[in-house]
Image (cartoon, rainbow, N blue to C red):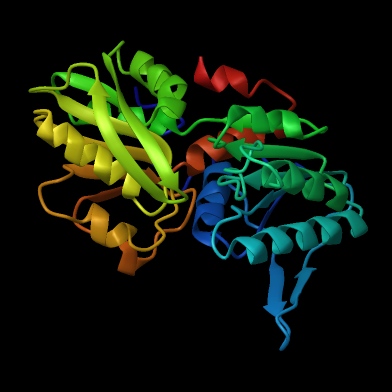
Length: 331
């Protein structure tokens, strides 16, 4: 189902933006993705100076007039999370003081999203706090991809467009011509995500790994609910952090007789020891992620496949700028 979402990028612009007031500004978190988005739209990123003072403070200066423009700030709040978030808010403030007409924060990966509710006493809901910080800094609209929890959209009192990386992942999986596919949720909390993914995979059957988490970033797989023996299992999650959840799930699927195991996730957080866990031989056929977070060369391993979401984000940016439907991209 190749479309604008996964089409090969060309040197020819897809849109006529000669007289447009659309402007792209990239932070330092993922400049490669920002450049790919700019290529899709046929424009250049606004020049930006971002540097750090001796004491660690960040300094940002936009090098081109954006007065009256529709500005899209591209900045995943990935590691180092605090610096990425602070830089984004400083960029927002700089745009506000430069008289931008509208400021949209394009956040392919939304950090601090895992604490989206209180699970015990005296905890912070950092997802809500982050939303408040972005609003107070002057953001007019947010464009996010595969939030850890869909309810985070409601934490904003400004428009929040939520898009999904699944079409990019599914387009690639379909090109592999896999047989006897079963979509597997690595935990009960991801069942809705896995069910939606399975529906797009031509109504593939669904399996669930029942798991108990004893501490943060430590998980224990217990049993598989559903039939996986002799099938190609596709483990789907929104992110891979240390790899504990996805790898323990893959080991359990192998024990239950799964012929092949693929891991799919939108966000490659890859905190240590993810590289060592994911690169184990004969565990995964492939680990498929998107470039919402930049993956450094030292984090690559033979089974890793990184897909670009630049076209999809570029299309969403264009539709927001033109005030047309974003949700229709996924119908």
